[in-house]
Image (tube, rainbow, N blue to C red; front, side, top):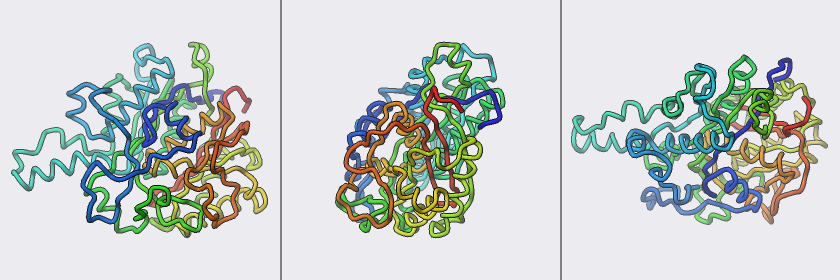
Length: 415
């Protein structure tokens, strides 16, 4: 996002994942290489191909939100609301203190309120239409999180929802950065998903990308010879994005700079053809950042865990960096420990990338230490790797074909 004097910076973060609640908790678990993948408990999974998922431990929405809000919303919106409250607290920002229409929100969603919708459909078919609740009309919709966050905090600025599957988590941050560059004072941006319901997972079985492994240690192993699909998860993250000078003027400490964002399209479920599109998205992001590929210090990979998709991502890195550099730049995939939370996954990667830039530690990809690599990559495994990254490149691909890349820079460094 060069060419503008209004630099978008992240000043606050909130996150929920299968490894814990809160950005610092999720970040600590990632640095330690911990995993939150385990047996499904949110619904009876016996007799289905899927037995493992990344479930958020001990999340009771009533501990974070008011009863009426919980009654009106699906779990994915409850996660987004909770993460937004955390992000605003972390940023020390009260929306009411900003000018009207200067604070907006953009979220990303893939599954929407599928669990809420399933329960209402069950009432429809078992008891009749008079038993379908009035909130079905709003709780299932992909934009429900954006709407509820806007209502909760009185946000009247630029707002929207992105439905680009996992790419959406990065797209939301890119969209927020551009709104700041155009003159908006602040944005809440990110994504959250709660897809772990029988109907939602039944819809996923057909594409053949879910891991059917029964051992949590062997279920999600991207870039290895044992890769056999991904483990789905709930979770996500939200970030407060502000204009840098205004943020500093109010006493906030920028945590990272959003430098560039790019998107491209590969074709639905054509991961074998996604190399060129993913590389194109990365080039766009770097061009917008005013950087060359050589400036990238660490890559947070999409890491689908499907052999042909992993191979295509490595080809994308080779197209971007060249063969030699592609084998040297550190690459990590923390989602191998949390599970793949669809639109929430990219937003969680943003959280972990910001922490990596701040702390000088690249989190490892859990479970991959000791697994036989299938592709030539400088994967960070086992334990966090000491590094002083200045620039991080984040990659994501959606099942619908969307490819996205985001470039973050350590706060305090020049453009």
